Length: 386
Image: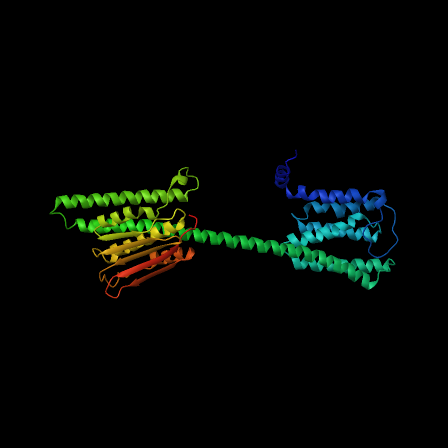
């Protein structure tokens, strides 16, 4: 059996002139068929004459330039127009006259520069041809010449419409590609923020605490060990993230994104950094929670990071409720913090969380508490694919 897909791929690999040549060759061969001689395009209504040597030239000028109608549209339309004029003045009326319409469509679609100049020159040439045919005894009349001119204009406009459609599609694809790149950069920035900020904040807090434990070697050793463990986890998470961003990495498919099941480990890491955290979970995680679990994890992670930054040592409560259709997260931190220690700091982390939750159709809020501290709440619809 013929593999038409393979044939099409091979055809598309050929040079554009090779792919455009068959149309001109077919018109040229058809023009020499005895049954079709003097039965082509007629302009001027003059009596036809038999083919001679100039008829071959006229046919060649009209047909062969179609091979370059996309590569060099201006050259193609110029040669085809010259051949058409010779055809009509010599009154051969060949089938090759149809090539003018194809050349006009291609010029309208592929000509990039000097479009107005070409239109003016072609129109002037057509008026000149009409005058010459009239002096040769044409009975076509102004109405006939005008109708034929409008047909030629329609061919040009058809090509121009194809060109505008192609440009619009290219612009749409460019916009989609740019939006995709922007979204990907935003996603990468969020992941880097979540991974780096949490671990580095924990390391800074632990290192600061270690400065006051020189008199207690056991506690100092435990604190430094926690700093080391946090640093190793940061390196591991960054390596995993870089693997995800590298399409050539063979192990990227085995990297598991953090989920709600990793909350206990996250809470324990925060406790090692010196933050008293209580975790309360209700309900059973849904097997199809997908990206909802990932977003819920990031909400808790960012909230605990802010607690370490702006309310270190203050009691923090994490409540996670698993429902059939949604996951509800609430992180409450006590303490007054500082003026700079607002729930969001620069706002980048919470802004990213809000966008993530909104993308799943949920609700997100981060507010100060009346008695001091702050609270972060998120309602995340479950069931979205990861």
